[in-house]
Length: 297
View 1 (tube, rainbow, N blue to C red):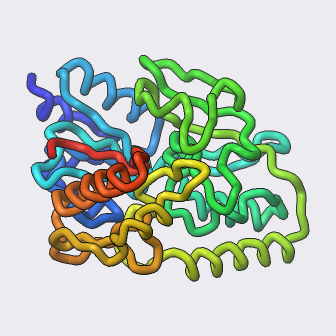
View 2: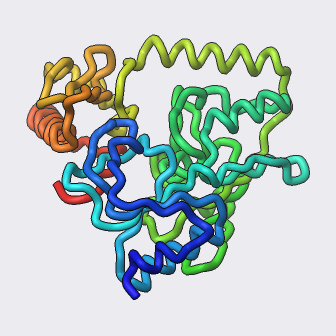
């Protein structure tokens, strides 16, 4: 029996074939995934990963598709979509969140229960799992600030890590090696006044609208090479508004690449490479991408 036949026999996951990834990424570009699975349980996630390993098929677990760039040639493997793995609930006094939950859903849950600490993350279009892998953050706040534990799936078993064991640093965690999949996180959030929390969310949301462009993008393309910011370095080499095909550097914030309806993944990839080279030539600084490239370029 081949991998496709094995997938067609599954009853606990929605399986699709030759799915255009431009429909599942914030850049809105990319070719087709040969296989695409939607799951809503850890059992299904483990089963699909096990099948992929058994048949030696590449696999990639995604949430909101906001930090990936899929090749125009597509992905010759299986994409496992965990957006439906999104429950949020109390575990004693702490908040337990499944990895597929969107950050804004978690922030709304916190607001409704008078819990503070996550306001600065409002508007980041990521799932909790993806945000933890990258230690996502904004305005000097990170998702790891109030984190207690992270649970992962590794070789068919659930592993639990304390915050210290996650090895969080700036836009990094131990989970970047992709050997295990983040499945769940537990947060300890302080009690707060609902009106103050709501005002904080509005303040950060308004600030984000002022400094970040509207349009199809993955958010920040590059990590900030401290003590500099990537946006400032890109601006200083004169690349604001610079275009490659249907991809352009934002004129509002140079660390954003905006894609038009005619953009190709290769346009974005080539623009990223040109930005890196220009900044290296001018300042001797190697910019490192936050966005992950999937497939062959």
